[in-house]
Image 1 (cartoon, helix red, strand yellow):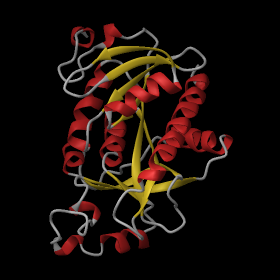
Image 2 (cartoon, rainbow, N blue to C red; image 1 turned 60 degrees about the horizontal axis):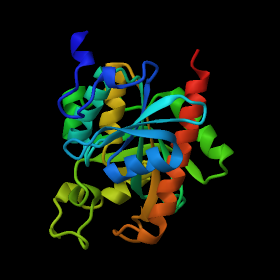
Image 3 (tube, one colour; image 1 turned 90 degrees about the vertical axis):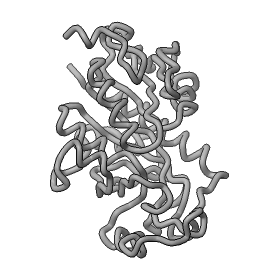
Image 4 (cartoon, rainbow, N blue to C red; image 1 turned 30 degrees about the vertical axis):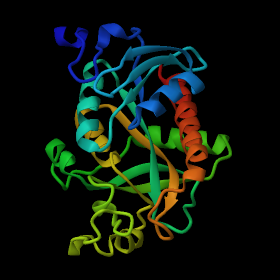
Length: 263
């Protein structure tokens, strides 16, 4: 269709700006992380767009396959716009690389969580599909990422993430928030979700997973754990860089394995 060859309004590039065999995007909330992935973990980086803070780059995996390193911004509403336009540009696989807080004692700072599904506490997701519609990652891509983490020798966990619209209230932060007064339904959320065997908090996976199922692309999410919410509301900044690096390495290795398996 003609609109697929035009530069898309929010991301600032279109299908015609990509190598013909580009089908995978590595998606980060932070533009600096997107650029870090393209420059430090991939080869032959070039800028696709620096537009609205949604910086995007084209780079190549070790096997020479092109991938987009895109920026989603913070939260599911912004991410949903970027993902919609990435699909219009011909992307068929999206791996989100994020940071996250653990709500299980066994999931320590510095480890990696790979989402099999999400508890979707997000308004944006309701615009994609009804609340009852399952927010599940592509199972084959998820297994590919888990195997990549194992081959890298990393501490990884696979399971359900809790995806929220807000960083403070929705993730039961009060002592580190400007608003110490949580709504009744949010008090005790960590204990409630932990009892459901939810592994961690983040802000995009649930909507991404629903979009993948509805739009027909393979969606996955890998997060570096930078906080242990049972112990502390605040991120562990000393652990952040190492945790992000591990999540990136899992995503890149998983992307290489995934693309090499495509006929």
